[in-house]
Every structure is written in C-alpha cells, then in structure tokens.
Image 1: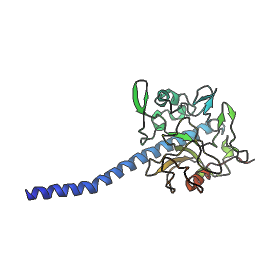
Image 2: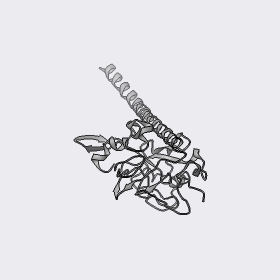
Image 3: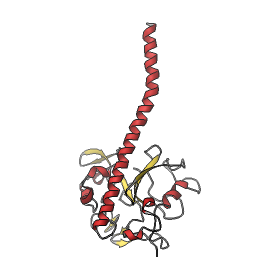
Image 4: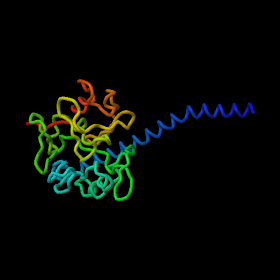
Length: 251
C-alpha cells in the first residue's frame, strides 16, 4: 500500500512538472502556425503589388455606409461582429487578396477560438487579422487620410519613410474589437483607438511586414495585454512601437 502511494505521489509530481511544459509547447506551436499564416499573407500582399504595377491592395472598410461591405474593392470583406458574416468564407473569397492566397484558413489565427454563431453553426471568426491603417486605406471608395502630415501609402514606392522590413502590414486584432479588415490606430499620439491588438500569444501579438517576414512581439506594457490597454495615462510604449512601424508617404 505504501509503495502504491509513493508511485501515485511520483506520478502527481511528474504531472505537475510536465503539464505546464506541454501547455507551453502547445502555445508555441499555435504561435508558429499563426506566424506562418502571416508570412503567407505578406507574400500574397507583395505578389499583388507586383502584379499591379506597384499599387498596394486596397483596404476599404466602409462601402455605401456598410461596415465590411462588398460594394467596392477591398483586400477582405465582412464585419466580424456580425455572426453570419464572421463565419462566411465567401467574404474572404470575394476580397482582392484571395485570388493570390487561395486559402481561407490562413486568414484565421488558431489561437482565435471565440465562438460565433452563423448559418446554424458555431465557429470561431473566419478572419483574425487586420491591415494597419496606412496601407492603401479608402473610405467608401475615396482616399482616407487620417493625418495630413502623415499621408498613407498607396504604391510600393511610397514605402520609404520607414523601410519595408520595419513597415507592418498585418497584425492579429483582439477578438473584442475585430470587425472590418482595417486596424484603427492613431498614427501619432495616444491612447489606443477603437481597435486593439491581440495578446493571445504569450501576452503578445504576431505581425507581418512589407518585406514578407513575420515577427512575434511580446507586449512590454502590462496594460496592452489587458481588456483596457488605454487605461491610465501616457506613455503607451507598445502603441509607440507600433506607430513607429506604420510608415507614411513622403510629400
């Protein structure tokens, strides 16, 4: 009987040691899968501009007054706050980038498991990623300039103020704020705007860049990996880091 208790105790100790390690390994695998999605999206983004005389793929979040509407061209469609749209693959397939990607699955981060009910089924968001606000943004078909001193980029040659290797294209958006394919964040100043970055990858986020590579950023400010990253007062170091990678067009 004593021997059995000893064995049980050893098994419990081993489980206590191994389970966190296995969980960490699982999280790393999910993070790696997401980074691979980012690399594929960034490659498709680059191929699109190469096939279109250097013009960047458009990001038009509002058409005819409809968030995520399909009336005008955009890299992706759909409002992820609407359950029937959040699970609708056709809204991905109708986007400008899909013919280059040809794979709906790479628009979804495996860490994004927030259930959405659509067409009688329960499933996570079909899209977990959004495009940064300085990359060919439109509003109902018209150029959208957030700050005149920092005009957005619409052609490959516009990406000069910040090098392509440092210019963000896509990032994981928080499941709390993700709606259209446009990540709303102030080009300068603080705090965060209506859209927030995800923090499901080891209290950090994955991002892809204009040169095709992808990175994991671990948030340095504890507020960024909380439901309310705009709480308190400046500085907001993670926001500043992202803003430095948005870029703008030389005038």
